[in-house]
Image (cartoon, rainbow, N blue to C red; front, side, top):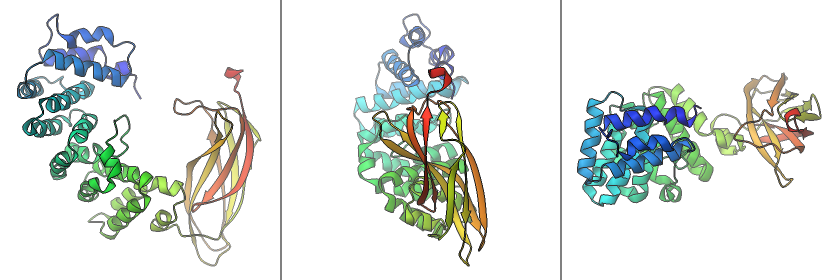
Length: 371
């Protein structure tokens, strides 16, 4: 992902100030450029949001009029500078405290979302009045704009990355189902992908509800059953990794009596920054074909010495009666920002249709750069 200064940097500040005609020396938006350097992306957005609110201190109606005027006249009024703008719109409407301001803020977010998704700002309005917001958002599912239809699904996700949580959405998982039911057969894959991610969020807390919803969608897939099937597979990916029997069964991965040999490790020691190669054999001794979802689980050592498993996809395959399948994979221990490795004992298992087998242990050691 690009660095923060590539997304909300000096150019974005100047474009925002120019679009809003806030280029006078005392403009807080214009002055914000000097304060960006040490800030994260969200902090930069918040800084510009607050500067924008300070520079435009009138009522909500005049604030919204200024934003719409900038959108109409300034081609540069687009991209990541829209994040602080939509955030300011939501805050301004709530501060005003009227239904008219709230409703117009929702409409303005829908107008701006093709320039950059307004999903983060939408959370502020959802937290303020979920029922009123959802009533309007359901109308977005019929919009001609795929960006607006996606906003309906993405902005209401229970666990939207980078975004604040909406406690009532977490507590009332059925609240957003009308939106998903309206969009799962959408013509746009961009929208359907969001629907799949939304249902995957739900599955983490309400697996039975997610499976029941996915089952209903498969029963009425619309004009493109392949697209609905793809959506459901993506939506249930977390449950499949967890070995959830109903989710696996819905996707056609029934319990299978297969024989697993392995995993066989190329080495019992691997350095941080390196990779571990392993192989295995899966054999189907039954007289019927076996449809298999084959994954593997790496048990990482935590700082306190305990192990925690993370499941990784390997492959799906149909084995004919008596057929064997040889598989191999290299698992990387390259250093990444989202995972910290701790030297010491680790383990690896295969998982076939949700059933784990063949635990093999190895030791992760410090890499050359860490010694």
